[in-house]
Every structure is written in C-alpha cells, then in structure tokens.
Length: 161
Image 1 (tube, rainbow, N blue to C red):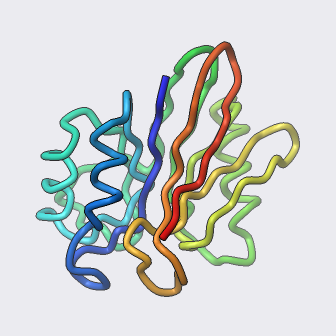
Image 2: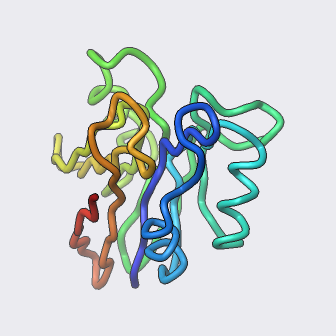
C-alpha cells in the first residue's frame, strides 16, 4: 500500500497554495495523512478535494472549527501508526512524539510541527516528520513522504523540491 504523508502546509499564512507536484503525489496515494497546520478551513477543504479520505490531526495553527483530533491511530498492512502534530517546544519534540507512540502502542509516529524532515527510530518507535509540503518557514525546502507499507514493514521515500 502506498501511503503519502505531508503537513505544515500553512495556506494562506505562509504559502499561497499546495504545490502541484505535491498535489499529484497526494492524488496517487492509497491513503493520505496530513500532520497538521492546514492554517485555515479553506486549506483543509482544498486537501479534502484532492483526497476525500484523509487522516488528519490538529496543528497549533489550525482553527478549532475544523474539529480535528490531537491524535489519530490506524493500522495498515500490519503496521500501527499514530499521527500527531507534536505541538510544543522544539527542545522536547522527540520525547513528546515518542510518548504518543508509547501511549498508543504504535510502530510508527507521523508528526509535524518543526518543518524539519525526520526519519529516526527511538526506543523501537520510528518517527517520521515529512517537513513542510509548501516549504513554509522555517523549512528550507518543500517535502513530503511516500511510504510503501507491506507485510509489517515501512519503506520511506522523501520527495523534495
């Protein structure tokens, strides 16, 4: 199964739209995850128009009216995923997202917030942060992850421009 993970889009406050190449990657996915910080209801709706079935969590810049949860958990192909934005101080970011993984017995935690790409394993929990799909500051590039999930394993490919 092909899972695409993106987030920290910050449309319209830091970017005017999601780049077309990111939209193309998202459209071709079997399942899509957004790690928070849509920034506005119109941005959330634009993503829903790309893919009606998206797993999404609330970011610290998202309006409460979106009604998004702080954490979502799902399983695909024998891999348990937890999704969180990771809101809070950067200094304690890893500990926070690892704690979410522990709390939800996740194999992989998909998170955002820092706008920095991350692929690291801590205490047996893989942490993946796709960076910013629009290159929103403080990101220095536009990125998203494509995950190939099969038979209990995850192969991650970073797309960037």
